Length: 156
Image (cartoon, rainbow, N blue to C red; front, side):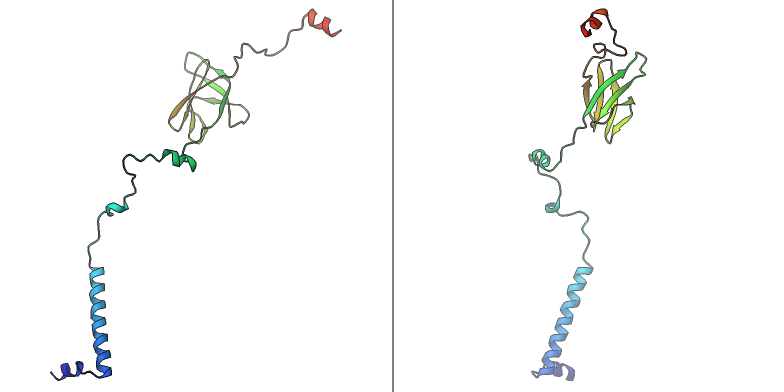
């Protein structure tokens, strides 16, 4: 009992000692409550990242580049047969025309899906797009240009 009387004395060192013991006791209690608390298994509902029903953010996403960009493809020619072996001459993003087979990648996320007699089908990120040839090659003069007497008479 003598020690208890020493702790409750109103003198300076006794008060400081009592405050130190009370602070230590509160600190141990707080840390024990924090360290021994159960861990939550899922985040609280207010931290859910999903959008609420009825909110369409597509237009806002378009401002910041959220929509997929379309790769410009120009069909310059096709080699097509009924047997399914087909190829196409394509200009992708303004580059010189190159030959591509069905299933071959034209650009990241862009593949040649099918070749028909009049154009091609391009798969751009899961969206099938039909691209027709610009000019019918049968209407264009290919190879040598025949010279007739009428054209040589005009030049004289």
